[in-house]
Image (cartoon, rainbow, N blue to C red):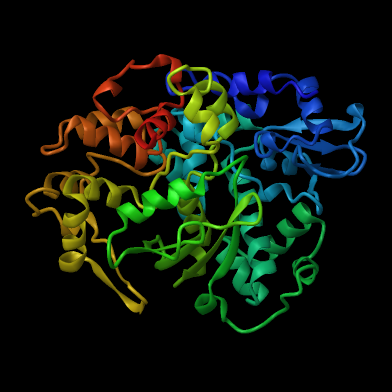
Length: 474
């Protein structure tokens, strides 16, 4: 039997204040090998393993015959496996697994860097831009990531670009040249070399497996279909209830009957605009989604922001183990598996909406929102940028702090520093600051109500945001 308790205990020991253990290195190699032998999907994305006799790396749940222990090597990231010359398995597609929940838990430089790389910062700004956002030198960032994850920021971003390219090759009819640049590659040659190295096939061969074939630029209009993988049970109904309750007209909508709803919203992205939709009903361990983009270079960023909104990289097993051991929450945890702590697709938008409330947000959209060039049904606007709201009587002080950088809410922001900055912004209450930290900054360890003062309920750490969801909907 797989020793999942050892791995889970190591995962749950990782907190903002004690980031010591790394999920990808949880337990020891023998424990990880037992997880591979039992094809335990709970650890997909937590670590990867390479097989020296085949030169292939896989996720722990790969259905292939379990290799002999002496032929197996373990890696904390897909990029580390690729860096050691291993190619992605064709059967289990290890590049498509949910991300490690650890990056949402950790507040140190490695966790912040991983969140920024996921958002596409290295592709847009390079390693110097990443280092500048983290407040470290490029050499320090390179050293810390390589020492802990077996790969530096360039290799981690390369692995992400390869996954985006495979997705576009196998789900759209776009020409290969367009896909190369949409995925973030600097040249077609670099794109071809990377695809061969990671997948052991040419882009044309990779595309042929799905039968999409070459075709005109229709993907921008038709959208990119996606399967957004998650780990373990997913309480989609509760997530969609929250999205429906919070939806701002013109920017968001939830349509359909409970159990078969679709959530849609507009997005402001680095290179253009987008509209994303995701379905509540799913036949497997994923959510069906579609992303319409004005500029395909925004695909990676849009996917990551949708994953943060829906909390798809969470570890429901670690959450259940910790919270289910508490008598106050045990019954709720058992009755409602897979409860998530949703984040947001736009942190600055969420912070401003938190201050003005749902009706106030609708008024802001009507007065200050940016109209879409081509409205899509009831989706007509982007939420106004902070620079448009600096004179607003309620949202103005926070909007000004976001514009001048006094308050940072991007994926790589230092959560403690951002919370301290929020605390001195006029009009931001302690509860509002806690909600913003929980949702906009994606902190999994926040209790936003009065009992959630720092240090409250240490027995629920580092999953107090999930405890808040159980308590709120109990």
